[in-house]
Length: 173
Image (cartoon, rainbow, N blue to C red; front, side, top):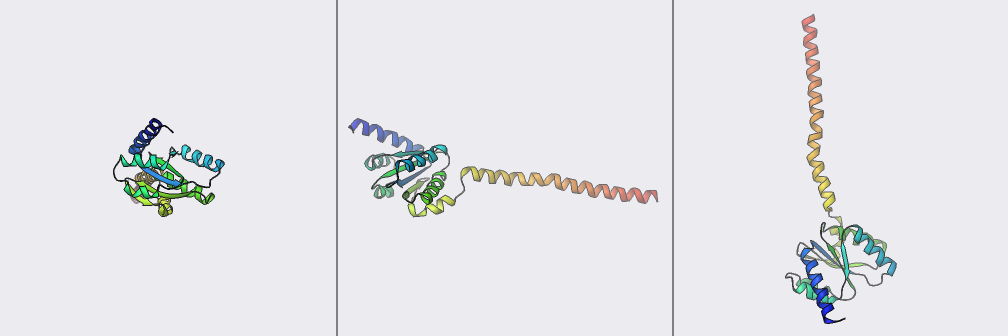
């Protein structure tokens, strides 16, 4: 690979690192071509950018952005990086599910909001609610009091109608 190609790759990865909300560094050694294709497909469906780049080039890209010193020692062996832009938890869920199915894939380290987490915490990260799940929960919380309002109003109206009915009966008697 020519120096200019390496510099271009480092520039691209640096740009992606700057935009990413989460980065998941995986060890994909031992995966078959079909399994690797399946993994890439899962990431793509969820809007996650998955790249396999030489460790030295990833390191150079990370060096240009501060705060990733703890990642360097994990850049050994075959490394794939999943970059999350919209929902930083989605790659953890995909990696967890995929590694349960194919034991060859493992998480080396991940970075969420510039905080570095060891790969052993994958199960914890995969249990976090995704952005979509959090939004649904928030909307459900907001809407639940509103759905209760008509029920309360109907109950009050029923009580009011029964009270008026009792008054009318007393007047008539």
